[in-house]
Length: 250
Ligand code: DC
Image (cartoon, rainbow, N blue to C red; front, side, top):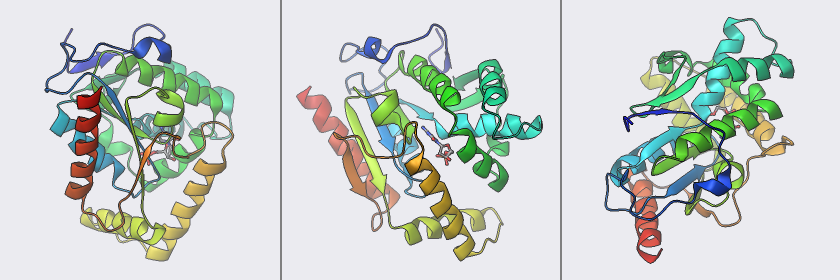
């Protein structure tokens, strides 16, 4: 199998995901393992997770992009984000493959379409739908079943991979998170009011935290890292050290 193209096949139960250490798919000298990174938006999670995966030679799975893809499709097809059944059908029909670190939707790289403010808002609504969540979690487990992987999202350590070897939960002060988001948008030429960003971020955090299925919270055995005053490289170093220590003592 081409290690860079990871396709979902059979349904996978989380309990079947224990694999031997130092498996052959590993491109690094770390044991085969699942590393989860959860936390709210603006904590640097995606950047950190991607860099950590690179440092370890692991695959990287951005699970937020899966919710964004369903949001994108629902917007394109005019599906009401409140129509849970239509969203479930849409999810079941959407093929997702991890290709060179990016998930493709029905064979297409849609990275450039799923980061807009509109998709961001709808993704947060789509993520409330239990049937969408369970299908996407099932796919995440399939993808992780053949790889050393760093999985990033909101429920990776609590729901998708409760037995992951290494779990992190990143936090940062709300103002700092909004400031980072503002800088990120500015770098793309978008000027967005800080207060507006902060308000929208608070609304999304609340939706993520109070939803009945897989609310955003740290797993009991997660290492919590407050990134407010750290650079991305510093956070990556902290996480990498922890993963390597865990791997060495496994
Ligand atoms: O991390 P992100 O901003 O790309 O995530 C998009 C949305 O999906 C966001 O509202 C949170 C939600 N999400 C989720 O509920 N569970 C995940 N594992 C990943 C993302």
